[in-house]
Amino acid sequence: MARPSTESRPLASWLAQPAARATLALALVLVIGCVFNANGAFFKLGTHRDALRQASVFGILACGMAVVIISGGIDLAVGSVLALVAVCFSLMSIHWGWPAWCSIPLCLLIGSACGAVSGGLAAGFGMQPFIATLAMMVFARGLAKTVCGGMKVSTAVQNPDGTYRYVAVPGIFRAIDSRIFGGDLSMVTVIFLVCAAAAWLFLARHRHGRYLYAIGGNEEAARLSGVPVGLTKVLAYATCGLLAAVAGLCQAAQEQQGDPEAGAGYELTAIAIVVIGGTNLMGGRGGICLTLLGTLTIGYLEKILSINAVPEASRLMLTGAIIVVAVLAQTRSRA
Image (cartoon, rainbow, N blue to C red; front, top):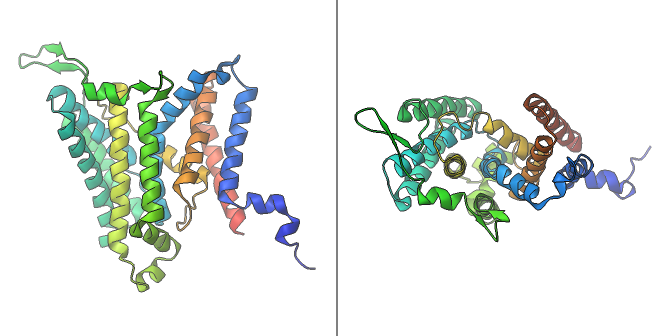
């Protein structure tokens, strides 16, 4: 019997598209928010502003994660790199009083270096990305604790005699954590959108961005076609580390301190955002626009659960179930 044509199954054909599935997931979450609105709290502008603000750090991490996953890799170190940069940024800005034009580039360099090392281990030494980034995850977390002595870096600065004095929150912290347009938009959200636009331009317009799709689709074919596989992989992980550093700056500014324990488990949320957005975990397919949809889905889901006082344990289980459903949807669409 002849197989039904695609035209005879418009709904199935539409759902086979990653963007369609990501849009449907976001729509379902918004419908849930409308139903379980916590006595109208979901319909308030402040709820949506806060949802975007809370999701922005995860979204920045997810943009970097998408770049790596498209190349066929994975980066488990982004949460630890975030913590390392948050600690270093707080030390430089709060305790040492360095200006922003000095501390921010150095922190971005630290994040990029961590990513480049992971990429070098994977590309130069043939190490599995899972193992290479797992090692960096442990190393960066340990380095963060070493740099700050295992203590949070806050506005309480210890004097030589052991007493403490309190210093003002640096202006760059207040600037990053500020709101614009009459308080309706957080600056962290603007930073996230800028990072997303830059990542999109890199993937869609830059030569090495196109190389990433080729490597993720078929690494050996890309190598035989003249693609510099090793260099491109290192660049992908360095980009992911750079965006993790940006997220670390935002995290420190929002918390007004550098916490060496910050970012624990953030890598899993970033991966969940990328998967829910529809980017293929096997590499070669996906994009930043899909990651934006995934960020909105996870951000609104977290906010809906929060305003309805759902326990943290239930949130984690629900997120895990959503990841399974998203991956199964990808598998069925390829069948």
